[in-house]
Amino acid sequence: MFDFATFIPRAISQSIPLLLGSTGEIMTEKSGNLNLGTAGVMYVGGMCGVIGAFFYENSPGKMNGVLAVLIPLVCCLLGSLIMGLIYCFLTVTLRANQNVTGLALTTFGVGFGNFFGGSLIKISGAEVPSIILTNTSNFFRAKLPFADKFGWFGKVFLSYSFLAYAAIVIAILAGRTLKKTRTGLHLRAVGENPATADAAGINVIKYKYVATCLGSMIAGLGGLYYVMDYTNGIWSNDAFGDRGWLAIALVIFTLWNPVSSIFASILFGGLYILYIYIPTGTNLAFKELYKMLPYVVTIIVLIMTSLRNKRENQPPEALGLPYFREDR
Image 1 (cartoon, one colour):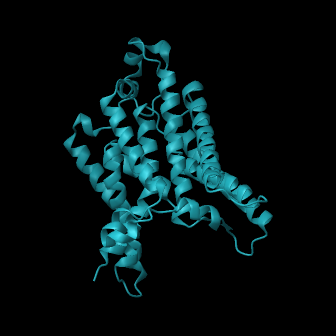
Image 2: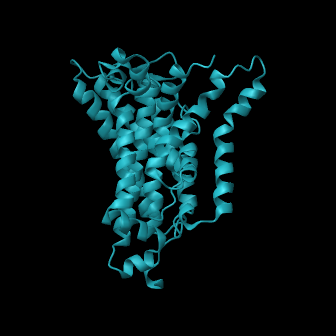
């Protein structure tokens, strides 16, 4: 019998990096910037958090819980912010091709993570090719103390770390900001028609920089969550897999709606691990087919939204296009 009480918490835990990555990318794309470097940003965010945690955990003295969380968190946000600034400088200021820049950042981010990950492994003298930060992870993975008292309800809804709940709050705030505030209206105007927004007195450059950098910081938290929570503080090179690309796929799946990403990311997280719970015997071909499900679902949704051809289902009109103020 399919064990939903075990499957749902694992699907939600799997979904948090996807949710943070997709929320950050939605914020970025709403400004008209197409950042295909989300995977690289998540790598850098996770690695920067690991660097901060590694040196604090190996410093003399007793670990402080607040600092054990705060140091990796700040390092992650700073590293992700730098990635966002690099992207903005190249694409907004220098008007470089956004697709090429994003792919370059992905390659750079993966290389950055693998290089410093390998360096820390050598420094630690570990016998296995991984960094283990169990003490720091225990602080990040701390759960609500009363969750076990509520049985299956506590296991399904109350058994997650603070970053998981923060990811949901961030997605809700992002959705409300985009739809209900003047700032969100200005941001959407920049993404749809930057020339008109500029003529209306909106600082297009500022909005692109702020939205992209903020989006990168949110996506970077996805990398930190994956290392400190999902893998119990264990960093292994090339362990992120395709989660960054799945986060970008979620943006299309949710039609650029951060609130919808909450439910869609859980669906994707469930589809991502479904092959573990469905018996396939020794037939590995079926397991590989089950792993394709998130991508198949994205393609189907893309086809359906294209056939409906409604404006609200389409990406920002100026997405991926450089803005030349002298052309308006």
